[in-house]
Length: 125
Image (cartoon, rainbow, N blue to C red; front, top):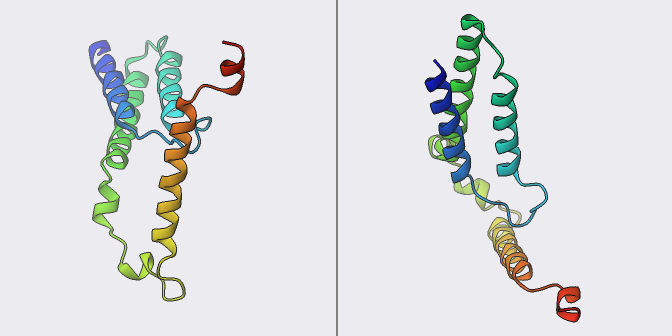
């Protein structure tokens, strides 16, 4: 049973590792929150000895892992695609394409900014 739990834990970590990084909000990183939640959840249940309780916890974790995998694989985006009318509303057909472009540009600028040394480092190095 313990090897199954360890395997389940590793599966969670593999899915979390594939989770995309949000460059626009580095302090609110969902990937980091998922990692903390999983490690803390497994750590809290280390002392559980009752096999029935342990089995129920494993079943719940498997359900959560399945949901996380589905989200990571964009399964629902593919299963329930949005129509062109959603992406190009009649009132402003270029709104969402412009929004995506602006977000991509902001993410690129944020990445470039993170690579540059700060003013303090440049002055006092």
